[in-house]
Structures are given as C-alpha cells and as structure tokens.
Image 1 (tube, rainbow, N blue to C red):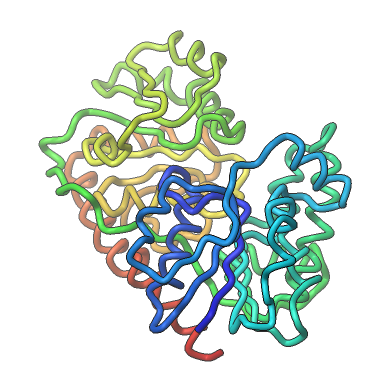
Image 2: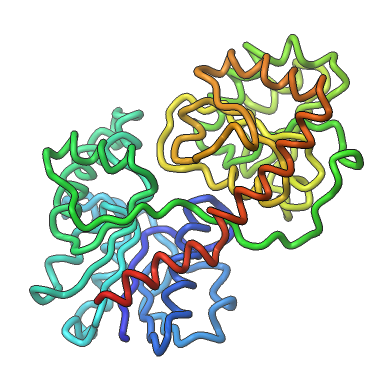
Amino acid sequence: MKILYLTPQPPDLYSGGGRHCYANLRSLCEYKDAAVDYIGPSFKSVNDFSQYNLSVIASRSYTSMDRLKASIKGVPTSLVQVFSEVRHRVDFRSYDLVFIEFSYVDFIFNYLPQNTPTICCIHNVEADYQGFNRTGFDRLKYILVRKSEQRTIRKASNLLVMHEFDARRLESIYHTKLVNYTIHPVCSFTPLYDTVNMEERENTILFTGSLDSRFNEIGVLEFLNTCWTEIKDCGYSLLVAGKNPSKKLVSALAHYNNTSIIANPPDMELILRKARLIVLPDIYGTGMKLRVAQAMSYGVPVVGTKLGLRGYDDVEKYGFAVGSVSDMKDSVLTLIEDAEILKQLSLGAIEIWKRKYTYEIFRSRIYSILGRL
C-alpha cells in the first residue's frame, strides 16, 4: 500500500499533538507492505523511522514568509508552502491512501484524483481552538480555519475524531452529519522506566504541559489563585514542568511557598514517575490531553476539570473530574490525606491505560480502517 502522509506539525515526542502525529505515522509505517511518503515540517524523531519504508519527500522548518504567503493564498497553514515546492513532482494518482493530520490541510483536495481514499485525523475542533483568540492575524486565521475545516469534514472519506463530543460539535458548527468517522483517542507508549511504588514517591503535585500555550498558563495561574493557598502547607509541593514558561508564570510561582518550575525538562517521564498526582486545571476543553494517558501509564492519579478530562472514560477509577478549577482543591486534599484512596487510584490508572490507551490499541484502529480500503 502506497501512502502519502501530510502533517503541519512535526511527528515527534515533544508535545501532545506531536506525539499523536508520531503514533499515527508509526502505525502507517508498520502496516503490512506499506510505503509511506512524508510531506511536512522537519522533525527530530526522523531517525526513529529509519527501519521503515518511509520516504521524506519534503521536510523543512517554516519561515515567517511561509506564513505570509500562505495567508495571501487563503490557507491557514504554512505547510502549503512546503507542499508547493514539491507538488509538481508528486504523482498523486499513485497513492492508495492520503493521510492528513489536522482538519485545516484541505488544500490537498485540490490535487487528488476523485475517489482517492483519504483519512483526516482531527486533533481539535479547530473552530473552537482558534476561536479563543480572535485578534489581529489570529482573527484572519480563525476565518480561514473554519472554511478549511468545513471542507475537510465534507471531503475526507474517513475521519478520526478524539471523542464523541468533538464529533457532535463538528456536526453542530457545520450542519453536517458525520458518517465515516472513528473515535480515535490518544495513546501513551509503554513507559521507558519502571513504575515507582506510591510509598517511595516524592510528595509532589505535578502539572505538565507546553507552558508557552496560553491555555496551560491560564490554568496554572487559576490553580495557584484558587487552590494552592489552602494546599501549600499540607506537606506537598507543586512542581510545574514544561517547555518555554513565560516570565509572568515564573514570577507568579515565585510568590507562593512550596512551588518550583522546571523549564524544558530533557526527560518528562523521569519527573512524572515520581509524582504522587497530576493536576489538570483546564478551562477550555479543546482536544484530548495526552498527558493524562501518560500519567496513567505510570500509575499517577489525576485531578482535573471535566473539560480537561474530556474524552477519558471511567475517571473515577484513577482520579477526580470536577466542575471548575476551584473545585479541584477538595479532591487534591482528599488524596493528600487518604493514602489508601491514592494507592487504589494509582492501580486503577495502570489498569485503564492497559485496557484503553496503549499504542497497540491505538494502532489497531488504524489497521482496521486500512483493512477496509
């Protein structure tokens, strides 16, 4: 099977979206007799795919001019510029499948022969995700993204959607009934390190995520303001770990006792495996948070908002899902004060991860679709 794979985001292990792309690309490469052609940004994990039949047709970093030229074309992603450099030498008729990451890469449909099988993996409802910031250039991007997303869900022959809420949301926004879609939640690969017994872990409450995301920063600040003042003297510390924290966030953490921050940690799993619990103070609810599945794989209980845990089932077996960030305080205190509940949720987390969120289960969904083509 010859597959063309397009992604606007690097398929790597350094972000949630990147990990989802990585797992999709690896699944395609591992399919029987698959030959995959890659078009997208350069990615650090390219050597992980050296054992597979993967050909990099186009791969480079984006520039500011790419963004400008894409906008002039009315396209919301710089990927179109990378694509334009090689499209004249790509025989689109030769592909048995075109796999598209994200719902705003609709420009590819201009070049595909009619009836070419396509799969689009929808990471977020982009109309909602982009809609949170609609000023300046982002206002233009929001308009372009909505147009692209609507076209994609109507043109793609198969859709991968994180959870049912996203499917219903897409139908509501675009007044289109989704037919050929598969619920395709995140996965977390087999842990690199052994799980630490709860008794041997540090008294750490952990927040992980891309700290250059304003959504994550707002969540951490809200948790500090509404919860931490009543938790900070309970013998636990709050550790915030992630890439590129702002000066504002670093300064805010410095004003509270028993808090610390690790910027751009080289290995997040080493930090995660030692934590007693992880917090998810999300107030937006876009996509599906991969960090939850990763925490589950190490037996780390989760306390988060219902928006932050959207897409995850059986939360009561490995943590607490509450209505707001301020409501997280009581759940965190419960786990601090009751070691038995903490231990049971830790065991439940590993069990649910093995049953629902491993890479092997993730890959089987891709294989099922490929087998029907």
